[in-house]
Length: 196
Length: 178
Image (cartoon, rainbow over the protein chains, first blue to last red):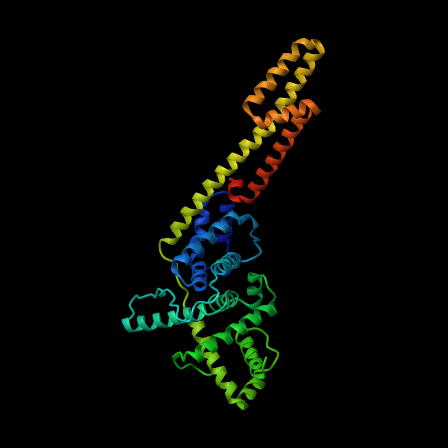
């Protein structure tokens, strides 16, 4: 995960990029490519689309860097750009919900020193999660991704999505309800977990 | 929203570290009395656990390089656009100055010897007509209505283009600053 707060090095990179040094912006790309890519992949479900959206996100960030508010975390700012870009793309492609039998792109699973069985299970679980996400409308999907993969508070999600906190609560609740109904209706095999 | 859904929402508000309106103990007691809802809560919690455990999907290795190249290309493109606008705006801003100077010279010539200035005006009008049709029309119009109309139009156009250039350069922050 990328740094959660704007640190001195990051401030230096931003100032350097604003002064016209692309090398400084390259540091920001290096630091934030994973969170941006993850969001785009979780939203769009295809690696090619995610790469394209990630690139577009950084280009937009570069062009509008002078509009960045230094009081805000850079991660939140760039994920705001990425979220809206992905929602726009989904709306344009009318991919709010994929067909029930749509198969998302296989997720890349780290294989370093892990047995093939574990890799297969991990890949299956990852694909399953991506399949769940693909069934959600774009707005709900973004809220779920920002909550679970980035650990953002409701207030931060509201700021990123430009909606109110009650709207975030509502979206998350509806998204969870939808996900739970998908799990129940498709009898997904979930391993036993601890009690609440 | 059903009573069960309300309980689930409260349960997840607490899990998301958001202040819940109901106390956890009360909620647990309520769920214990409603096994169907408790079963649903289990499904929700299992889903929640799976989502929380899902790893971050890393970007492909070569992506950062591709993005840097795209940014550099964007930077070059922005600079070309800015340079073009600067040249066009500059020329458009310079034209009125030249025309005003010319008008001044013609005015002085007319005062000294009207016979000498007249052929110069004719030559200028013919040249403009030949090179720029649009400019020629404007010149004719200017000649008919007012000798100041053409310089004023060019000055306005130059000013607008300069403002557009400045406005665009504000959006191209890294380019502007460099």
